[in-house]
Image (cartoon, rainbow, N blue to C red; front, side, top):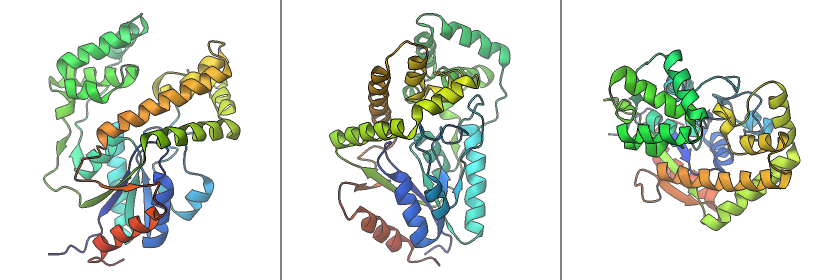
Length: 314
């Protein structure tokens, strides 16, 4: 039997593939609003380096979960889920379609699968001790290895250099004696959803990434990093461990030339794209994949949504 409820639409894929542009176009065509599922775009003053939606894109379609926090603040799945669920409910209540767009796979799948995350309060002393360990030579990798011994699945999902999230996973395990990867349990009433995946030839994707990094530099990415550094935010830590912020921060301290920083930013962004494909696998049957190198990709996406929304009131 057809449901009258409008489904949640997710547009997923690697960085630089065009998720935001397609989400905005689908909002325009079908009446929707965008929910951000990029873990870095929630931070204020990190606009260029996170490829945050432009003012024009935001004017074309309302966006949710952007510019929520200062770069020094923590944000994770436990914070994302209730905010995204609230946005979904409010958008649907207006008779519009919630369209999730972003490359943070953990966030996307948790929202679509109706997961919940138990509230585990922070333990400042435990965190400080682990962060001190991480600051020692080889310490970050040692912490990641410790997590792998406890919870291999969670370790696989985290970069060893993302010390904050590794520490958080160890903190959750210490407080609950449960594997963090097993604690976001599916709700018995999963969200009705459709998932569109955008992809392209890997070599072409890397070229798109490189071109976008060059465009970011022309748009003032270095100046953005300088402003954050001048404000006292430590480059390479927390949210500012993202590709580009770390490397340009190293340029500002004299560790790298500008050319080296840009080159490393491109390499690290290639690495990020490969990691995102571990969350959005090409053979995942939950995802309908579209190749963005096909000139008709927007029409294909529109036809796909139209076919699946035909039993609802648009």
